Image (cartoon, rainbow, N blue to C red; front, side):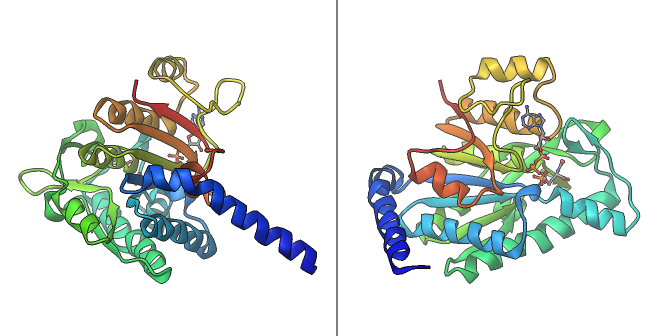
Length: 287
Ligand SMILES: Nc1ncnc2c1ncn2[C@@H]1O[C@H](COP(=O)(O)OP(=O)(O)O)[C@@H](O)[C@H]1O
Ligand SMILES: CC(=O)N[C@@H](CCC(=O)OP(=O)(O)O)C(=O)O
C-alpha cells in the first residue's frame, strides 16, 4: 500500500473509533446475548474474527453471553454414524441415539472450538451447557419430537457470577428436566430463554442470511410482531427462520429490549450492529 493510502486508512480507522463513542457509552454495562448459528461458523479465520469482536465487546464493558448452535456439525456426525434424522418446523426429531450425538457434538466439538477461539484472542471464555448449575430446566416440547426440550425455567445466577468476574460464558443449547433427562433445545430457543432471564439489552441471532426477507426477497430492516405473525401464516417465514422469529416474539414479551436477526458471515457483524449508526439485519423491538 502507498504511504498516502495507508494514511487515509488510519484516518478512517480513527474516525470510525471517534464516531463509535456514543454507542460505546450506550452499551457500557449492557448484556448482549449472541446466538452463533452453525451455518455462520465458518473458517478458523472467520471464527477468530468473531472471537475478536466478542473480546472487544468485553473490553469496552459489554457483558457478552454466547449461545451457540451446531446443526450442520451434528448432521455431519450423524451421517458418519449412519443415523438418520429429520426436522419438523426447524426442530430436529431427537431419539436417544441422536441425543447422545447431539450432546457430544454441541458440548464437545462446537463449544470448545468457540471457547478456544475467544481465549486465543485474549478473552476468558467458560464453556458450559444449559445442564450446568441448572441453567436451563426444560420439559418435553412434543412427544412426536422425542427428546426436544422447551425451557421452563432459567437460573441465571451462574451467568451473573461469571459476568461479574468478566468471564465470557459460551453455552451449548442443552437442558435437563427435573428427573435429570437430557434434552436437545433449538439454539435460537435456548438463546431467547437465556436473554429473557437476563433481561438482555440485545439478543443478536447470527445466521446465514442478511435478515428476514419479504416475499419479494428484500430484507426488512425493522419488523413488528404483527408482520412476523402474518409472514409465518402465509409461509414467507419458513424452516429455520421460524424458531428465530418465534424466539424474537417471546423474548421481547419477556423483557429483552430488542432482537436482531443478522448475517453472522458478514465481517464484524456484531460490532457493526452495536457500535455504528449503520446497524445490520432485521430488528424486532419491544413495543
Ligand atoms: N423469510 C425468510 N427470510 C430469510 N430467511 C428465511 C426466511 N424463511 C426461511 N428462511 C431460511 O432460514 C434459514 C436460516 O435458518 P437456519 O438454517 O436454521 O440458520 P442457523 O443455522 O444460522 O440457525 C435461511 O438460510 C433461509 O434459508
Ligand atoms: C431441537 C433442535 O433442533 N436442536 C438443534 C440444536 C443445534 C442448533 O440449533 O443449531 P443451529 O443453530 O446451527 O441450527 C439441532 O439438533 O440441530
